[in-house]
Length: 266
Image (cartoon, rainbow, N blue to C red; front, side, top):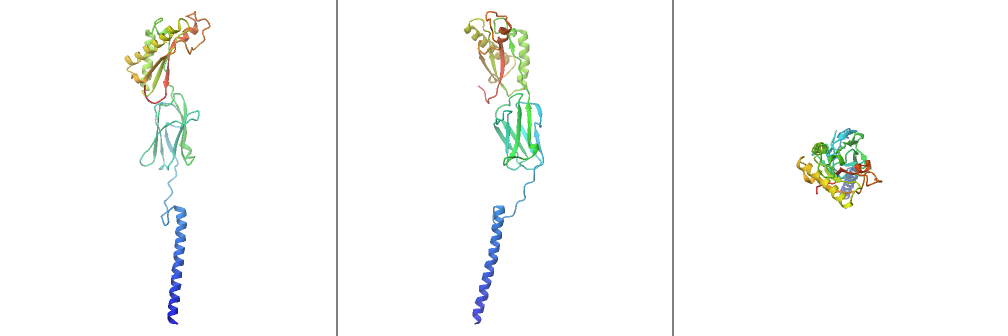
């Protein structure tokens, strides 16, 4: 009978060991459910972000159309999303760069911002803004080039008058202040005269303006595109085209500048 008792003791010991192991495994599985790895040590939660420091500031106006947008944080930022939208709620495309310690993020737009436009920015995580200070808006500065009218050209000619050259010199400075912007130079004509003649005159005036900006202003040619519309797209309707000195006719003989917002040159 004595050997039987030894076997019983051993059986009890084995059962006890198995029971303890089951408890350990159960505890390990529960830990795994919380942390993603059986037996892994719990990582402390990342410190909460209590402030975003943004540039340009919330509510800023006259922001450069060539500005990059940055935000720095009071603590390392968790994985998030940088969202930038226009006033019509359409998204702005660009490149997002994070610094090495995840405490600063930079948004570089693919193309210059539109002038005199309000943009909204937000940094989110899982669909929620990281902090109230991580959502802000700003407005870009207007970029205005002075248009040329008929009085700024010699009569029935594409040659600039001294007054026209003075205006062009102001425009040159604006172009130099905004070196990333490209412009379309568009020439127009009044309804008086033959259509073909008016078309060619509008083209010659647009060309003269472009060449002045390049030759006298030192503006890079790939920043300037030109087109002539002739008597199409009038600023004002001309009820009497034969009246070449009417207010409408003078308003229609002009050269306008439009910012090209796409990326790259032509």
